Image (tube, rainbow, N blue to C red; front, side, top):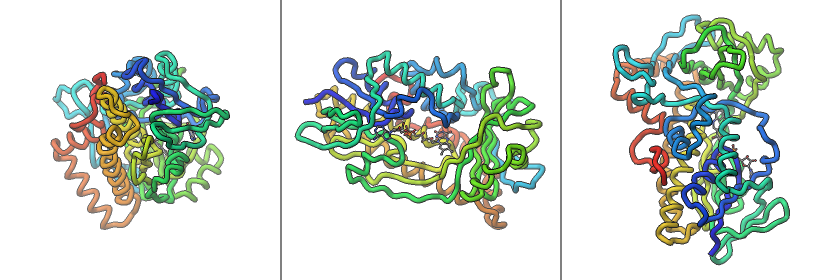
Amino acid sequence: MSRRIVIAGGGLVGLGLGLALKQALGASHEIVVADPAFVAPDRPDDRAFAIAAAGRRMFGALGVWAAMEPGSQPITDMVITDSRTRDVVRPAYLTFGEPAGEANHGGPAEAGEPFAHMVWSKVINRTLGEACRASGVELRATAVEAATVEPGRVRLDLGDGESLGAALLVAADGARSRLREGAGIGWTGWAYGQSGIVATIGHERDHGGRAVEHFLPAGPFAILPLPRSDDGGFRSSIVWTERGADASALLALAPEDLTQEIESRFGLALGAIRLASPARAYPLNFGIARRFIAPRLALVGDAAHVIHPIAGQGLNLGLKDVAALAQAIVDAARLGLDIGGDEALRPYEAARRFDAVAMGAATDGLNRLFSNDLGPVRLARDLGLGLVDRMPRLKRRLIAEAAGLKGGEPRLLKGEAL
Ligand SMILES: Cc1cc2nc3c(=O)[nH]c(=O)nc-3n(C[C@H](O)[C@H](O)[C@H](O)COP(=O)(O)OP(=O)(O)OC[C@H]3O[C@@H](n4cnc5c(N)ncnc54)[C@H](O)[C@@H]3O)c2cc1C
């Protein structure tokens, strides 16, 4: 029986899983992460991700958070507004800051713990890559081209011409997963007809760790606090949802015109703004795999589910997959079960598919509710937001949900070793 696990895809999810498995299984199993993109040291589309508290605890348990934290920015306060682009004053309908007088100085999630941190993807990528190498994970700069299930193993044909046998293949190869397709796993999904424009914005005044989400008629416009630049300047990341055609037209504008468009949405609270990076647009889709497992195969991250970035939860869902799959594999290995068998993998699918569907549905519903300007819908949602704002218990539940700190998580998400 093979003692090798091959992870196809060395994005943040694939690398996180490689590290978690190697740390828990040690020399008893060989862990290979294969990705043709390993040849490029830093990805060109660098951006920052909101990493929820559960993901941060997992990084802590894996011993990599200390290297990520210095360049990260805690989100200690969050405000939601429902406005039109031309509105000069944007009343806050929902706030998730520290209520005055409450001794919770770390932020809104739990005492001493902000519910998310903004972390640069290149920092996560580099830290996980280095930790993988140091702990003995083999990183191979090649693609997994095809997988054939044979008795007791799966045979993998690699892009470099080699062939490898493994007990288990994990597809962490992103939304257009070729390995998911090759295994005949169906995909339910649709395109939103929207794009997410991402850019770094420099501004005059300190954001104070506050995230802002303006729900504008074309879709949400999120302002997420970033750590200061090397020269001490204040910065935030924007994730700006627009209809697809409008996004293309906006990106074709001269930089000063694009800056004006951003300013009219960004508001004046942080003073004058400037574009501090090129703006890039990502087409937005929803999709979920019909199964998360097949014989000798498990899907994780965007290969299993793609959701609207309205709540910044896509990667966080992938990190939850990492924790659940690592736990399932380690439990099976300890019991002497075949780690690529149905008995080993079923707990993973049971733990993750429902949660991914629920988060996908919630973000889809939020996007539909807020990406329009119909008077009665606006009134109803503003009343709803106002009511939630007056219900501290419900707010605490929403925050725990966004932070990934609801009960029943795998040990790794609670910051415990596997
Ligand atoms: C605008 C926008 C903003 C977002 N903001 C957030 C946020 O703030 N917080 C958050 O949690 N999420 C966010 N997300 C979601 C997040 O970007 C994704 O969920 C996450 O990057 C998925 O990571 P992954 O490792 O699963 O896939 P990917 O990052 O797509 O990695 C897949 C990897 O597989 C490799 N690969 C492909 N085919 C093969 C093969 N055959 N063999 C080997 N390797 C292969 C590729 O080279 C790639 O490196 C956002 C998404 C968008 C669009």
